Structure formats: C-alpha cells, structure tokens
Image (cartoon, rainbow over all chains, first blue to last red; front, side, top):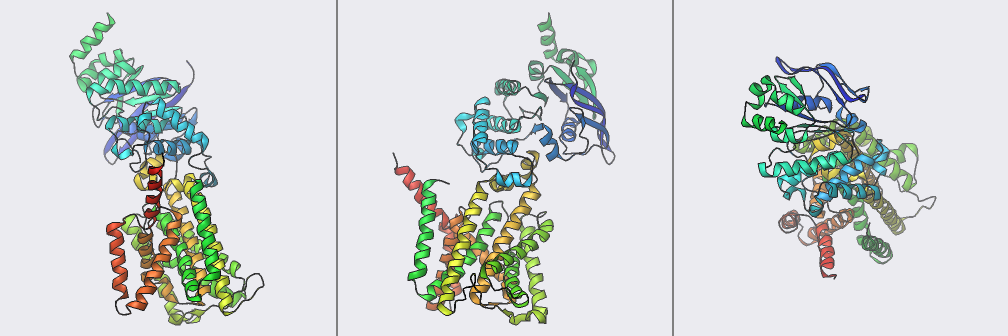
Length: 263
Length: 316
C-alpha cells in the first residue's frame, strides 16, 4: 500500500472537563473513500474541525502528505490541499450559483499573496472554465443564474461540495453531505457527489448517519463513540461489530440485509 | 468592463471637461467640491459592499486636508498634485494603523468605533493652538507644475485637477471591484466563515478596504482643502461623516459612477435648498433622503442600471 495521505496520531481535544476527542489514531491511504459514523456528540465534527484547522488539538499530531499540519490556521491548510464542505451548506446567498462557483474557482487558482489577490481578476478565462466544468460535474448547470438564496436544499448541498472541490484539493472532508435531504433523494445525491469526486481522484472522508449510504459508498468505515474510534474496517465488518451495533447503529433489520447480500 | 459602460464613462468625462470651459464660476466651484467629496463616497462604497458602514470617514478626510495645509506651510510644497498625493497617503497611513483595530469589528461596533476615532482627532485639533485650534489653518494657493494661476484661472485649474484625480480613482476602483480581492466584498458580507475556509483572510481583505477608503477620503479632503483654501476641525466632526453616509445612501453602492453622480446631486440640492429655503433647507434635504430610501432603495445609481435592463429587454 502506498504512503498515507492523512495520518493522525493520538489526537485529542479537551473543552474544560469535556473530552470532545481523545486518542484518535487513524491513517488514510490515497484515494480511499472513508465513511465516519457515530451518534451526535461522538466527536465526528470535532475530528473534521481539527484536520481542517478550525480547532487546535489539545494533543496529538496530524500529518498530511508527510507534512506536520497540527495547529496550522485553516487558510494555510486549505492552501496545502485539504478542503471541506459543511453540515449546513455554506454558500453566498446574494450571488448566483455561477458567481458562487466562480469565486471558489478564482480563489483556488490565485497565487496566495496579497498582490496576487488584487491583481487576479474574478472572472479570468481559467476560473470561468473551471466553474462551468464543476457546475456540469455536479449536474447543477441548469441552476447557473439562480440566486443561491433561492435554491432547494439538495442543490445547495451540491453547490457547497462543488465549491469545496474548486482548486483541486487532494483530500476532501464532507460533514454530513446528505443531512436535510429526504430519504428518497439521498442515494441519487450521493451518487452525483461520489462520481464527481472520483473523477477528480480525490480522497474522501464523509460523515453520515444513514447506514445504507455508508454501505453503498464507503470503502472503509470509522465508528466514533465518546470522542474516540471504536471500530475501523470494511463497512460489513464495522457494521457487524457488536459494540457498533449496541452503541451506534442498533441491531436492525439492515444487518440481516447486509448479511444476505454476502451470501 | 462592457463597451457600453466604457463609452458612457468616457462621454461623462468628456462632458465634465467641456463643462469646465462653459459653466459659470459658481457652478464650477460647486462641482469641484462635489467631485472631491465623491471620492470620499467612493471610499464608503468600497466598504459598503462588504457590509461595513463607517461613520468616521471624516477622520481621513480631515487628515488629508490638514496634511495639505501643514506640508504647504512647513514643507513649502506648493505643487497641487504632489500635495494631493501626500494628503491621500498620510490618510492612508492613518487608516493602515487604525485598521488593525477596526478590521476586527462589524456592524454597529465598527460604525461607532470609527466615529469615536474621528472625534478623537477633532478633540486634538480643537485643543492644539499651534494647529489653529477651532479657527483652523489657511492653505496657500497651489501651483500646477510651475504654473501659478489666480482667481478664476485657479478655480478652473483645480476643477481639472479634481476631474483627473476622480477619473483615475474611478478607473482603479472599478478594476479593483473586478479583481478577486474586490469581488470578495459580497462573499465577506454574506458568509465570512466560508471565505476563511476557502483560504482567504477576511481581516486582511477588510483591512485592505479600510486603507483604500482612507486613501480616497484623504485625497478628497486634500482636494477640498485646496479648493476652499482653508481647513478647520469641523472637517473631522461626526456630522461631516454623517453627510458622506447620507450621500452614499443617495448614490447607492451599485457602481463607481454613482459616487460622483450622487455627490453632485447632493451638492446641487443643498445649494438650491439653501438659496430657496434659507430657514428650511435641512428639512428639504431630509425629505430628499426619505424619498430616496422609499422609492430608490438602491440609490440614484440604480436608475442607470434600470436603463441598462430596459435596453437589454428591448434588444431581440
């Protein structure tokens, strides 16, 4: 196996007396699609926030492509090639879908200097092409000229993830890509997202509550409980883990379906 | 920029140049002050687009004016263009320093803090005898690359200087609005968190805007100091800042040209109201503002955009 793109050692985060994360040790190889499960408050979002630099870990280290990024500010981490999307889509409501995407594309391409930002035009030929390509890739081109404030939830999610993919990150962290989406739409939404991300050869880590989605899209599953990883392996193995069943997913019919699929 | 915009901007500039040869003196001096103030309004628009309203632009306006008066007095510099540049740069310097503090605040806190800073300068000037206290200072008559005009010629020369400075500022600022740093104003207003996660420093973006608006306000103050020939602490008083905010609402933050059109409209209305209704002119100004907010919430500038859309709609 090639060297890991992300390697986390003994990572912990303490808020006063509360351990939001403790002793997390995980290593993710290039181009793997990793699902993260766990109940609310299990530390999934804290984990993502520490990797993206939004939270500074209390202890432990994070290495990205062999470089230590522990405690760096999120701007710098973004520049190195880690991007993220949000549980609640973070878009610019007073811009159109195209303008949203073009802004993301222009930032992704601009040289990271002060002069670079003043001298780079927003709508350079390259960033317009990149924005149009991403709109096509995420199948939201028909909404191109709509104001982002007026978009339906699913399209907002796609736009949010599309914007995160601008600038060609090598690792993308998706915080509940299907939250707020109806059960019927979830699967097709995930399909659009995953085929887009795979075509860009992106390593993906996504948080998800729906075990069907996890089984359908993850190659590997991390199960979080009380701030730490209690199970790590293939979806079938992790979801069959008795601790995972009692603490997270519950012993549901779904497991029988999973077992039947393996027969 | 679209071709039609370039043509419109070019012909507006040409009309303003021709006006300099044709119009009577009182109109030219009114336009000189209006366009110089338009620079301050342009600076407010730069911040307005990022959701920030400064009630303290008088700080930079006054800095620019006093810099011209003091450099002329102590440094013996008389060249108008050099004085205006130095006035603008000294205000930009002040904006850079206070920017480290201001860039951390938003909304009403930003507005009040900027107001407080301008009132500190006001207090200092009033208390300082060597800077003329409440009487202020006279500004020596400027020269233009060795040419030293008097009376009407000076009036016209200053008018053309203001036109050149305003046209340069308008070109540079519209280029800035099209750049990534300038275009990020609306994203910053909408969602700072996302902008940070995209890899941009919001506080640096805002700091840049503060320096740009300080530079513009200082340049405007310097030009007004030359045009009036006198500076006094009232340039830094909070009502001066309020007036600029007033003009910005009247003009709207939609385009660069709106700053100058709005400022010209404001000066005209004020001078008209002052002549016609010497007792009630403030009431008339207030009514104009009320009507603008009610019927043109995007300001006078939105009239131009409506014309645009009208034309587009008619086109096949």
